[in-house]
Image (cartoon, rainbow, N blue to C red):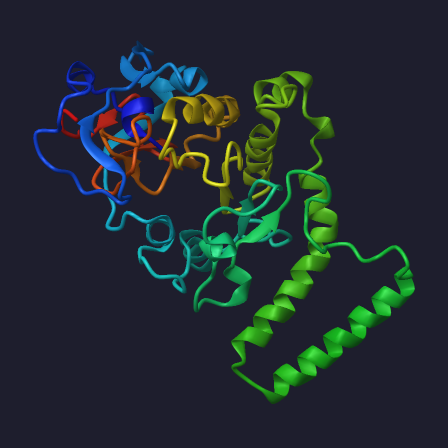
Length: 353
């Protein structure tokens, strides 16, 4: 996400728009020019805290007194896969447990009928690195992120084909359980097999629990509107945010929401036409993001829930191809709400550009 266009106003950058950068910056692509590019978007103060935020995110900005904005974030790699793995696991290489896996391993789940780590991605597909982003690494498989869908059947492969009779299914599961446990007795310490057995048992429990938790028919019309479900632009991401709130209520420990795959599978990767790209993606996530914080606060849950909103790195203050911004590992912004973080606080700063 471009911090100087969304979260971190740079008046000096705007004043020196079109001039050479006084120093050189680290670039990722080859077609960068060392020319400063000011933001085309307006910033204004929001809330009693007076946090300056962009016109691109009016709904998020309206919640300025309820989140902490960290403007001094940085990372150690400027390519997507490595930076995403670093954000998720603390390492630039895949194969290390994601943060959701670690939290599930350490704290478990408050609801034994649902996974402790649930992933809500765009049903249209996967972003960079795919399922590796929520990998459990060397931890038991039961701590991997479990994908729930925000459209169609909520849980993948949960229900059997209709052609399988219930009695046949019960008998098959009973036989499978006997074989698995007999094999486990003969192979003590086989943690992968033990995790697989637990996953089967969890899947059986989810057939009832997950369907009920993900049924939004009992949500009020006002709640659905607040999350933007009545607008095709905001509905997809808004639904994932609403499902996240329901999963939190149900005792799921860690939920990860991924952005829409529009206008591309990396919608924040604005190497060109950053103005058009941000005008497309920001409205898709603005409503649902704000609604989630607002809803948790209204229900008295924000003290016990942490909401983190972030990308893996920021963008550069110079032009790429004249109208885009390249990757920037040295500066970006992050929002965090709830969990004892001080609301209305802007923490840290970056330089004039």
